[in-house]
Amino acid sequence: MKKILFVTYGGGHMKIIEPITKKLLEEKDIEFKILALTSAYSFMLDKFSSAVVKKVSDYSFLFDDIIDEVMSLGLELLDDNYSSNSIISKEEIIYYIGLSFYDLIQRVGKEEAYRLYTHKKRQAFLPIETMKKILDYENIDIVISTTAPRFEEASFIAAHELNIDTIEILDLFGELYPLPKAKHIVCMNSLVSDSLKAKGFTDKKYYHFGQPAIEKTIENILQLDVTILKNKMDLKNNITLLYATQIPNIYNTDFSFHSFAGYNTINDNIFYMFQRLYDKYNINILLRLHPSESIADYEKWLNKYPFVKYINGVYNIEESIAVCDLLLNQASTVSVEAIAVKKDVFTFKYHLDKTFPLPAIMKKPFIFSDGFEELEKNLSIYLEDPKKIDKLNDFLPKNSVKNIIALIKEL
Image (cartoon, rainbow, N blue to C red; front, side, top):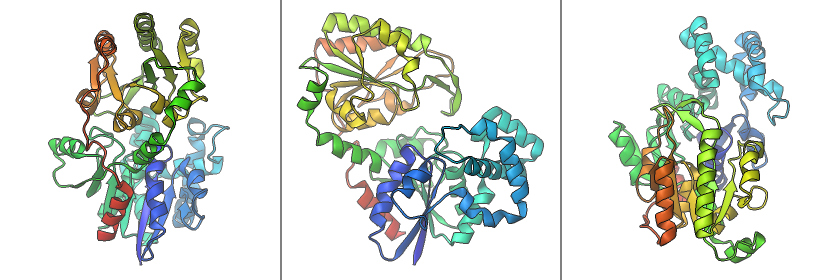
C-alpha cells in the first residue's frame, strides 16, 4: 500500500487539494493523509475523518522531548498570532507557532531567529526538521502540496532530504513566492512552465494539467443563468465592469510582501476614473471585495460614487464573473477564472515604489495597463468599440484532477 501526505493551508490551497483527495478515495492501493494547517483543518474535517485529516498538534507525541520549550515559545508569540474570533483554537496556535519557532532556532540560532521573526513574522518559519519527523513517522511515499511558505515549502525540502518523491500543484503563474521546490510541477499551461524554465528551473518535470479549483469554478460559472442573475440587480443590457479588489500591498522584486500601501491613493484614482467612464458610457460598475478586506475600507468611496454597486452578499464569486463583460483586477485567481470563461480581463499596475506586477498578467490574453492613466485609456478604447480580444484556447486544460491522479499512480 503506497502512502501520500497532502500538506495544505486554508484558502485557495485546500480547494486545490480537496477534489484530488476526494477522487483518490476510489483508489484501493493508495492511502493518504492530509496535514491540514490553520484554517484548512475544519474545512477538511468536514470532508474526511479524523483518521485522514491531521493537524500539527496531532503529532505532538513525536516531540515529547522538547514539548516544554515548544509550548513556552508558542505562548511567548501568542499575542502576535491569535485572534479570539479565529476558527483555530488557541491551543493549536500555541503548538503550531511554538514548534515552528523552535525549528527556526535550531536552524539559525536563537538571536538570529528572533531577528528574523521580528522582521518577517511567520514568513520566517521553515520547519524542515519538524516535517522530516512527521514524514518519517507516517512512512510517506509521495508528498503533494501547493505553493506556500512555511510548512508547505518545508514539506518539499524535508521530503527531498528523505528521498521521497514530490508533486507541487501551482495555483497560478510562474512568478510566485516561494519558488517551486518539488520534483514534479503541475501547472496551468506552457506559459507557466516556460516562465519557470527561463528562471533556471530546468531540472523539474512539468505537466500542463490546468488547476483543479479553477476548473471547478469554471464548470459552475458555465451552468449559471446570466439573465436571471442580471435581473437580480437590474443590470439590463448595459456593459458590466466588475472590479475585483485586492489588499493594496507593495511587493519586493521576488514577489514577497514588502508593506501595505493604504487605500487612499489607489481608490481616489480608480473611483474618479469610474465616474468618467460611467458618465460617458453608461456602464454598470460592480465592486467585489477580496475576502480579506472590509467594506469599511471602501465606504468613503461607495458613498461618494453611489453608481458603483457593492455586490458581496448579492453574488458569489462565480455569479460575479458570470454577470460581467469585463473584469478589472490587479492580478489574482479571479483574473484567470474570468479569462477561462472568455471574459475580457484588464490588469494594471499602480505606481508606487516596489510594486512589481506579475509578468504573466502583462501579456495576452490579459490587457495590461502601466498606471491609472493608461488604464483609463485602454478601458475607453474598449468601451468605444467592445470587441473580444484573442483568447488562448489552451489557457486552462480540462480534466486536471483525472490527470493528476494518473500522475500519482505513475509515480
